[in-house]
Length: 220
Ligand SMILES: [Zn+2]
Image (cartoon, rainbow, N blue to C red; front, side):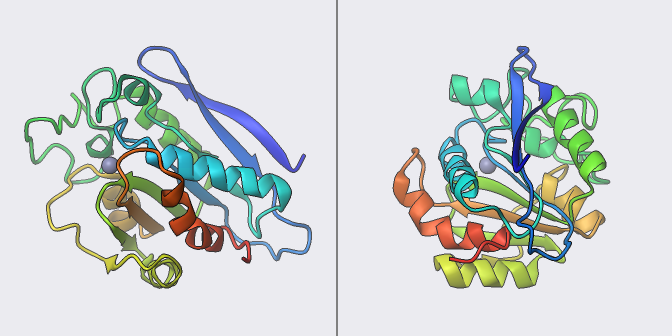
């Protein structure tokens, strides 16, 4: 089936975490899969909108590589309008990087142990199963294409298509972040996309549309 829906885990409050998989177009040469996820921070619902729009377009035209999209990872936080999950953990500080837990600031609770949160576990398990090479983490509300690992060429291609500046350094330490584990430490092609929009806004999608299609090898 060209498109299939999957539940990759459940949140703290037992809600399903949904992913959608798209098979590549028949002509595509084999490439490692791409994974895109949004709303790891529940107060960044604009990222869910953007990835849902991309998924809608992939129904009409398949991507050039196997693509997995998780529009909303932090379902509980998104429904509550909170950055953190229902345990008040910042999921983007919960990953098992070497730096996990080395910095504790109010509001950025990394959890009691690395990857102890069900939302983190679900994403980590999917990545272990899928072995993607290219991973896009969508955030708000800076305006930049941040890269880790071997993501610089892709970040530049995306920047050309959306006009957002490329940044390698977020400007502050992010121990236990997704980009630190999978980009800095494991060397994958990791993009942390920051949309300048706070609220779900179609313009956020329209500005990123071409760059996101590029990520999944779908020509404009
Ligand atoms: Zn964020």
